[in-house]
Amino acid sequence: MFSRVQVKVGGVPVGGDAAVVVQSMTSTRTDDVEATLEQIRALTVAGARLVRVAVPDTAAVEAMRSLSRESPVPLIADVHFDHRLAVGAVESGAAGVRINPGNIGGPGEVREVVEAAKARGAVIRVGVNSGSLQRDLRDLEQRDPAAALVESAVRYCSILEEMDFTDMKVSVKSSSPVVTIAANVALSERVPYPLHVGVTEAGTRWAGSIRSAVALGALLAGRVGDTIRVSLTGDPVEEVRVAFEILRSLELAPRGARVISCPTCGRTKIDLEPLALEVERRLEALGLDLEVAVMGCIVNGPGEARKADFGIAGGEGEGVIFAHGRPVKKVRQEELVDRLFEEIAAASGC
Image (cartoon, rainbow, N blue to C red; front, side, top):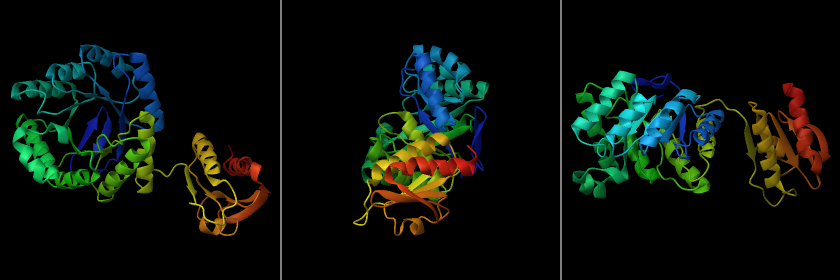
């Protein structure tokens, strides 16, 4: 969305004036075609427009033929150490390939990957992580890890440019949000290509979501980043959900379904957390562009959430359902969620 150059990954525009693209990566064995396709489809339903798959061996290369043919979104092959796997993945239909030129081989091997990408119209992502820097950058890494990442990425971009190849995306990732922010800001000033941003090895769903939100939020708010991935330990579908919540918070994606809820206080006389979770679950299933408030205080709830489309303000054993800041009806606590969604259904015609 913010780079000076735009590329197309299997028809999906990335960079330039294109919207920020959410992507994720499968966690299945790539050569298990059915399981991998099932996960790709789940990621696509969640909103991912690009999906990366690991290609660690020739069995995965062979699987890429079926995966590329059946996938509802373009696939990116993730390859390390063996350039022949990268070439094979592109020839098997991958719309893009992620390589680190520092561990894929010498200039001859890199050129083979470049020539395959040129022939097939594939995009190369130059991906640099803090664990894969050249030896001569180790001292710089100790002093300034962000600068070392940037220097490594710029070198690799230059290698591809010298081979007359510019259909590339670039990424510099660290497990540190602070380093990730600094590196990507600096890189955006040195290369014109789309940047794929994310915190690598961010952690579990709770901690990883927070670390990713800090880094991606800061970068995207500063107009840095064209594709994003939230790297979480667990179901990759959760990565996509978190990524879209980050984009919606920055008004970089359609608002979609959103639940806002209060943190509770001494006035709260209702078990608010399960109520909010149930509303969130049912609202997500409807797929409507709505904001729904779940508030724990019947006194101030409607006022504090008056901009929400619909909401609940709980009291002791009962609660008020409101629409656009105005009370609609008072109902018993156990009926709150059902009656709320009756109001939503009546208003939305679903």
